[in-house]
Image 1: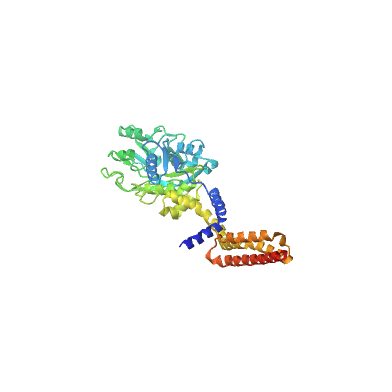
Image 2 (image 1 turned 90 degrees about the horizontal axis):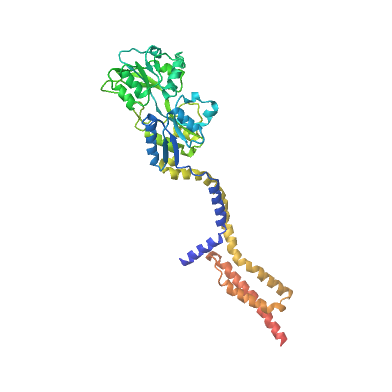
Length: 444
């Protein structure tokens, strides 16, 4: 066992030249590989208690399971979120935007934003007093109607719908009011309004409260398919009888509505390597679905006018990258970055290890053969009869060489060459000793 360990030690010492070479290659690997993605980001959400804020909070909790810190910043809605994404000094990398927001942006602004995918639907609800008959938006012209604040999300979808009905959103009927929310619902209940638009999840407290009143009705958008055809950024949403409230049977029949989708957006400061992590967490948030959304259907890669990431398209088509399916994100991300450079590194290492054998043999034999030059020089001097002046010195030197060779370590497979050197040294030494004896005899 000691002999084996000794041979291994000799082999390692003979190949020490590989250490700086491998060090240089590994250094190059670390130098050229992309830095790890940050494990934190800031997201602009929406109003406190709103659908955007609720989704973002659930997303934050899912990401925390992977050690990712998502900082949430409330906003006034989609427009402010867009402003923050376009502002390089806002510190925001992610935000939720309402589909249709692109209509307010120029081409340059759209190219600055990245769409990771649509994460849920935002139904538009039109509630009216129960004694009214409303079939189209034109039926609202003579009614007292709350259509949302001028810069709010409701108007972002209602204005294009009004334009499709040839109703000028800049010159609204006298009875229409530019507000919504709790104020609009209260006004309907005290007969100050006839109808009001609301935007948000079916589970939202405001929609649920509106559906709980027997004197209000959910108006069906019978022209939903026509709106969908003309306004690609909205979706047609089916609402089953009693879906909003079974006690009041709201709605009282299968109906339809329309709505935009909430898009998970990023800007150029967002690290693409985080895409799969963010989308997978959003998928977990929507795993069970909602009253409107079926389970396991979101996020989706819907047609849009924004830039997209290859990582996002891969996720929507095939799901998580292979390594992230089985490993924690930190480890999978590290492996993803290094595996790209490991292959060329192996290509370089293969010829290095291929020549390691010949280099090893050469270095071991060099320990033996380096003495043959000296022996050859002595032999030439013997042939040329030029040694008498240095004979004693050479004999002393060869004797010292014999002692030195006794300390030379080589693997067992090279021992025969070492002993051959011993024999050759002894042969030359004997010749020198005979020459000295002859010289001493002549001088007597």
